[in-house]
Length: 209
Figure 1 (cartoon, helix red, strand yellow):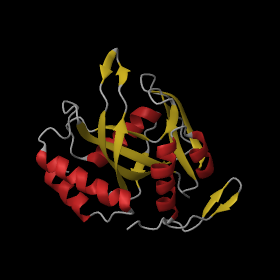
Figure 2 (cartoon, rainbow, N blue to C red):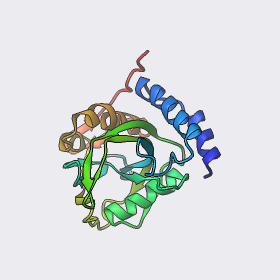
Figure 3 (spheres, one colour):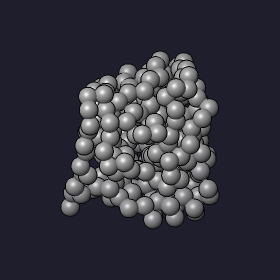
């Protein structure tokens, strides 16, 4: 996917709520006005791709324990010059979880977010606080496939039920504004989802006007 094809894909994307409506504007403007929007050389903000990885019946989600944020989280990473963000998301899942079989449920954008990143030390160097302009894709994998950690980034890889996924994250903003939203959106693909405690019915988040 070229830069212009990605722009067209984002322009066609229908935001799910007010957060996505506002963040869509930011993301589009940043890509259009910054030649290095896809590079970490842009120290203010750069593009990333995330994956919401579910099993076949959408009852579980794959997460990693992120070393920098000390929390269980979704998978994903920096574009690093690549404009095909779906390919980036798939690559990151394979690298971070150590699996080889992961496919998109759909090649369409699943969600988008403007994410704040606090200053931190990586590979012995300080990285200043900045923004990740993020595009998320819905991917599918098999929980029976063996997983492995990527030691320089995470210290755990595991499948969780939807309820567990919300409970495991120690990042309140992500739980409220990202993971809860993704679970609701995933629910629409099957209507009802089985969880370990029974049937979890999730209604659509109302758009904020």
